[in-house]
Length: 244
Image (tube, rainbow, N blue to C red; front, side):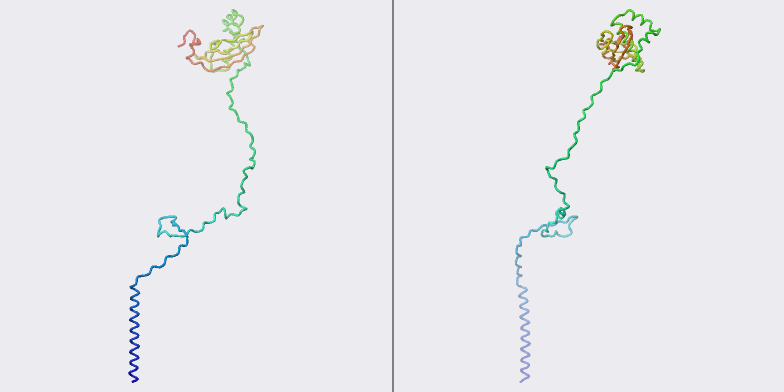
């Protein structure tokens, strides 16, 4: 009797274990077949996001999404107050600048007359070769004689002052009339010939009333006279030949 009861208890235990295993397998299969439930959405915390690009080269992976990091502290803000440059007040007086007087361009200095330190007309007339000139002067009187003596002085002064020139003729009234007053002669528009070319000349000549000799002389040699103007002033290239 006891043996039969033991077998009964063992059969019940084995049946219960088999039934539990069967239910567990059915429950597991049911869970696998049920649709998966979607996780609840995350609450909106109000943070913005930004795409941080790669600084150099093509990205190796997808661009990360990051929340904005705190703005880095500027170097100016990090510097101590003592090291900051003090602002310059707008109403601070400016340094006084020295006054500079503008320099006006200097005008071209006018040509000056050259005063003769030595006179030559008396010496030239004393030369034996000037016999004809001496005789011609005896026939002249007054302002005409003074003008001829001054012309002679002018030719010799140019010859001595400008060795490259060989003046042979002087026309004291070629460009403008001469001025004669008492014992002085002033020529402002004269012309002299040298090497078949004509040049402007001005001079001032003073004479002694008693002896009739030149006692002072100053002159100024000008530029060459264009050949196209020669005919209008009766200037010729050489004696006896008309201007071409």
